[in-house]
Amino acid sequence: MKVPYPVFFCTLFLIAACTKKGTTPVTPLPPLTVAEFSLVSNNGNCIDYYVQGVYAAGVALDANNKVYLRVNVTVPGKYSVVTTTMHGVYFADSGIFTTTGIQNVVLKGNGTIEMAGLKVFPVTAGNSSCSFEIIIIGDPSPDDDNDHMLFGNLSNAADIADSVNNYLMRKTYYSVSYSRDRGIPNWVSWHLYSNDLGNAARQNDFRPDNTLPAGWYQVPSNAYSGSGFDRGHNLPSADRTITTAANSATFLMTNMIPQAPDNNQQTWASMEDSLRRLVSAGNELYVMMGNYGAGGTGDNGYATTIHNGQVTVPAFIWKVAVVLPNGNNDTSRVTVNTRMIAVLVPNINSVNTNWKNYRTSIDVIENATGYDLLKRLPVSLQGVVEGKVDNL
Ligand code: MN
Ligand code: MN
Image 1 (tube, rainbow, N blue to C red):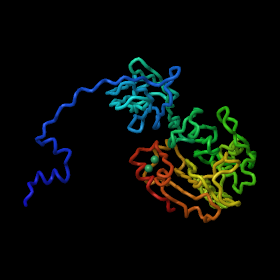
Image 2 (image 1 turned 120 degrees about the vertical axis):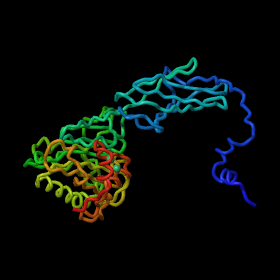
Image 3 (image 1 turned 180 degrees about the vertical axis):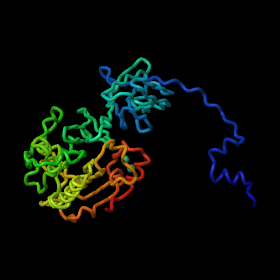
């Protein structure tokens, strides 16, 4: 039997759309009751609220930016909850409560937040009101040449104590995103050029970083003793030999990760030497080193943490270097042909000593970490340079 084309088409593909054209009359629903409910709060604070998504100054909110609030529904029905517009944004939700009792509303964010900092958002519904807080992170990396974060704040680290596992430390000789709970940096980034290299002796003054927020555990200099892992510098000691102070700054424990000794002393050390040779050859470098995961294999075997669980042993270690001939206006000099060296190495002793065997693309590191490296570059340029693998 020949099936009429429109029927066939609708049946297979467009049932929902095509039924609109059907002849079944639509019975209007009775108007819904308006719900009666109140926000659950204590002393003006919304209770058990949960903020989802990343909030950064100057970045438009999207579907990931949600705030979950508790409400107590006494009469089911339709509802609408909207915050006033504060700091350039508002949050809103509407829908239908089908039951009474404590439940969530999920407010979706709209707009672009203007300023970084800890912001308070009041919300009113009927006779009840409460407020919730959101940490708005800034992007403190300036466009100044030779800034340690010239190519951007890759993880949106914030220099406020609430940012416990992505805490930004902008130091004189390097910048750090630190994780309090892991007891190690997420990443360290620095500029490296001929003015950093001199004759200062290796200071070896490993020490806790007393610039961490009050109350945070300061990993002590002996935390790695007997663990089978080296105190692996992120910013290498030999990259800061212009003064004693510069060299000493690399020995803060916030610049260290537990690194498998053969990885640190062979593979990693030879890569660091190669990068410094590029400086001697007339280049300046922007270098980022980071890590992710838990579980490495050092001299005493496998471990996910050391020092009574207070220091995480990362599973993977990565490094990215942007190589530019000495000059000015550095971000504007990057082209599709700029040399970018990216490596990703497992944190194990049985690594190949040739670091070149571990070269990868920046995209691989971005996908593994969720970071956006080189975000100060135009997106189209990132799309090209981040996909390449160095082969020089
Ligand atoms: Mn990319
Ligand atoms: Mn990127």
